[in-house]
Length: 408
Image (tube, rainbow, N blue to C red; front, side):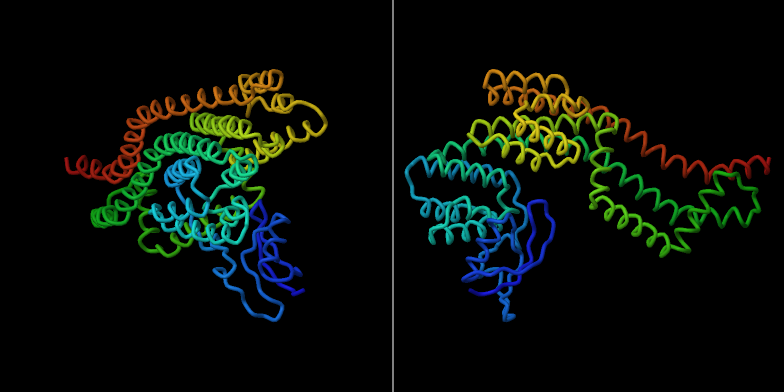
């Protein structure tokens, strides 16, 4: 037995360190994986570093793979399996056809593991940044039940619809964010380049400046003369906010606040409910145990408030109670239509179809609301941009009106 020092992350992303005894590095990795840990570094007790590539821990350098790359991969994989092509040959074909370098590298590691007799689920699970946990679990269910091609097709549909819904939401939010950035940029340009020249003119003329002009000139002088301090304050605010949001308290605050934003909060909640219903339907139809279904849904949603509600539902299930009773305690998160559909699904055993219908409903709602929001926001954001720039220009032109009246 040899001893290894490891650094790893658990399923919640928490970093852990420790030591483990195993026959070799592969056994050490397997033991850590069984404990729910994903090793990021493994060093022999003697001090010799074991490189990531040697451990086939490609996920350490993996970048996220977009859903539009995962969807065709699932469909192609399903076609090859249905045609009776062996797993090794299927992976070889997929590696040759994949254009995404990150996905190609991960598949090469998966193929190497499969050749060594490792299960497909375990091989994919070594690359959590490339293959989502839901993908890994459904592949495992398909591998165990002999319905791998069916699971892969379900995954393709799931990721396809998830991508379409999320893209609609992103499109609705991109325009106002872009206009806001442009407004900030134009304002800084005016304050740094235009206002100082006018300020010099006012000083030479000895004009009595109104309050709005004095405020704008003060901001302009601060940005020009003490730009390093302004930059430092901006960076401090960004870093502090980022650090706070990454904390448990900050994430809970953010997840609560985002649901309360007028209009956008409603759109966000509908998007979350669409993912909830679609994930529930897909996993339920794949014969995944219900407790594991709820556990995977929590990871797909990624919101602390929904997480707490679903954890309560898991506790109810362990007590022999219904999921719908727990969801009914959170009417702000789960509207009556959701809890009623879940309750009917529990009574009739038709949870898959009912959740599928609910997912269709909310996905359509997200698409429609995103389209209406984009049309409504365009003139509003133009007015916002004009208002910000207009206030700056008006404040510097007010003294000119005073000068003109003085000349008369």
